[in-house]
Image (cartoon, rainbow, N blue to C red; front, side):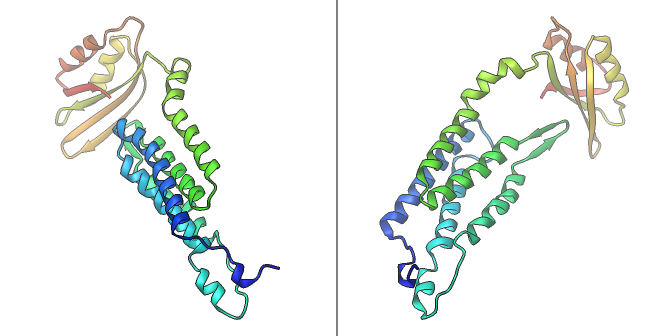
Length: 230
């Protein structure tokens, strides 16, 4: 049976190594998000990784003096504090998700924050091999895999159009004009902000269609105050 005085602890050197590895691995993923101009970048991912590592170490080693100082054996769960990271990081990830009309952005960044928390926990627990392997998998999924999978999943003729309607203008004439241009309107949504109405259209363009010509024709409509590809 393990003696009370044999409860594991970490020194300054081991603490520095674990936090440094967490910061370094989290920064690698954050750098990719930073270069892609995402809301959560290098600093956010590094802080999440370091914080997760420290929480894990506090739960496992932070109460060593309390556990080893009494005459009676005190049982403690070293993963109790770290377990809260799994659910708590969801609140931070939710803040990175933004809905813009038909588009939902930030899901990948929210997922990287969640994974970075796991990497930080692994580093804090001393499971370096798992932290390094997962970091490599994440970096592969964020960059090389995107270009490898794009030819198989991308729909080159399906685009999103953001149209700003004039005051008291209806969307029906704009949708009719798109149909006359041969554009297949797959779905659309209206978002009103004050006197301005934004029409987001998911459209499938006909083969050989020119983007500039479609925008020009839409811009000539009385109902349209502004139009762009989104």
